[in-house]
Image (cartoon, rainbow, N blue to C red; front, side, top):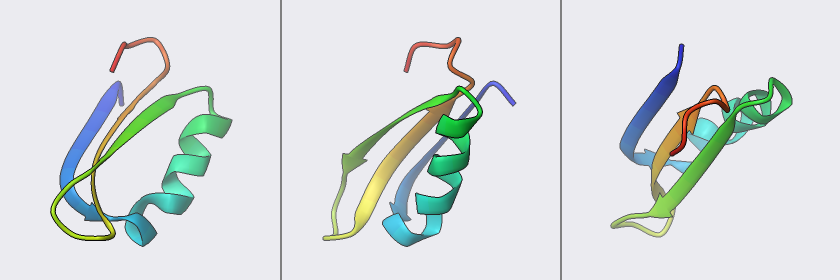
Length: 50
């Protein structure tokens, strides 16, 4: 997979996955959305600019 993006996802739903993305050489960005723990998350394989 080259990239993945989701809006309105909770931190606890992606915390472990983001660790794996970074360990595999990928990158991610998180922007806080509506709720206290809701985020817009974008991940990539590290070759794509987010």
